[in-house]
Image 1 (spheres, rainbow, N blue to C red):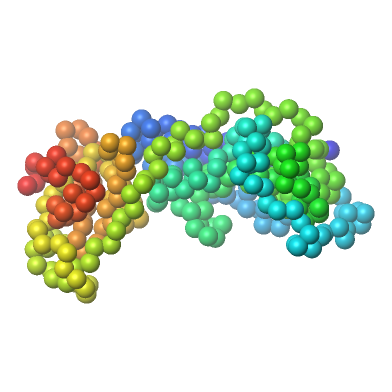
Image 2: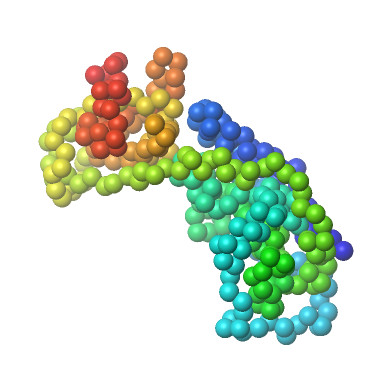
Length: 310
Ligand SMILES: [Zn+2]
């Protein structure tokens, strides 16, 4: 009998280590390093390791005895998905480790924060091919040992914390079909790993609002406005230049690291342009925009004016 379907490889472990280091770098306000480590954690070999296994869980069956066939029960008769309180209990018992293979695992909402902070380096779309492999392999699941489709309950004795592979590659099959040992027969791995929960306070609470204008009056000459139809006038002042230390540009946004505990975004568009720059040895971003747009984000306009350009 085996403990897991597929053994984690050196590349998988390296992706996870890069993910952990990226979060450490973000907390240490080294955003450039964090971005490069998140990017490194998104490894094609890691992606293939997982996606080959979960694409068709039937292929993972070892024991195809007919004794296990015909047990799938109708959806209406299945137990409900686990409640928030039972998930909390399972997580408290198992910690942030897969009970099958032992991989460190991370809740989806932590991945969402990383994606919001670093959208270019932590891609996450609906398709598997659009997802960051480091966050795919560490995607925390509440796994039904006996699947609900086979009559398993959403109870503490039938749920375990698992990684994405051990959950999805197991699919709707029974331990016996996959020749897997029951994970609750082994003690949980004693771990200090926090599931990257230390990233949670960095959740961007601000989401950029669209600014609509009818007039191009007052726009900076450097700003491309050609072809854009404006609907209503809300901005009157000329663009000025602001410097944000530690900010970076990705996927059409300027991401400003937390100031007074709050992250900000600027969407690059007709009213906002940006470029990377260094001031007093600090890497950051120059943002060209009307001052109202800085004030709207709850920032002291004068404090961020770039002295070299204005
Ligand atoms: Zn696992």
